[in-house]
Amino acid sequence: MKQTIVIATSNPGKFAELSEMLDLEQSVQWKSLSDFDGLVEVEEDGHAFIENARKKAIGYAKQTGQWVIADDSGLMIDALDGDPGVHSARFSGAKDADRTLIDHKNIAKILELMKDVPTQKRTARFVCALCIATPERILLETQGSLSGVIIENELGTNGFGYDPIFWVTEKNKTAAQMTSQEKNTVSHRGNALKKLKPLLREILKKS
Ligand code: ITT
Image 1: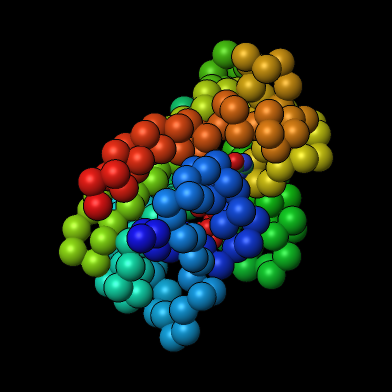
Image 2: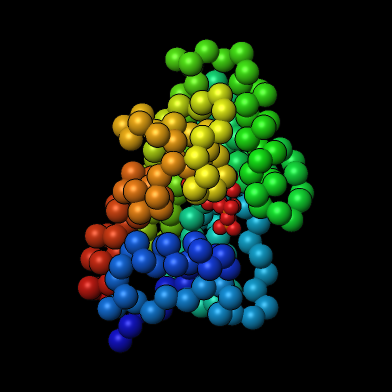
């Protein structure tokens, strides 16, 4: 029998990305939060990515009665003591409904805060934490990261969030200059999923 796993997002893009990258369709029936009515939103108020991923996975597993996979991710900049970190999504405080506008304001705030930071001190990393929980317990947790440098101007139009100012040295381009496939091979989310996949396969074999 197929194991149902709920991906803790209502965002169709993230649902497609996670279910495709996990690529275990044979043994898993993927669902999203949109398949359930009356769910109470689990607040992401933890101090670390893994805390938020854990909170969402457990919270939605209890509400749906199913296994749930949840993620939290963001950008950590060394010169800003790890900020924007868990506040990445709304670092500028912008409450606009338009995600592109929020991203633009977040980037503007970072560039302003870092205007006097020299190149060699502009190191940063994207981090992604993943957690799978049943209604009873945490089954699996993994983390992945991608190191880079914050550049002084936006470059590239692909991706989202901080991608246009995130220079990936090993690729000699920003994350916004990569196709989504290319980004998946090096990204924090891709790395966390690569670690999770064999562990999940083992658990599914036993269940
Ligand atoms: P959810 O509804 O799934 O929570 P979200 O936009 O909050 O969507 P995340 O928690 O994964 O997504 O990421 C928080 C923020 O971190 C996100 O809004 C971006 O600003 C930034 N971020 C995360 N991953 C990124 C990536 O691959 N490229 C650029 N920015 C990223």
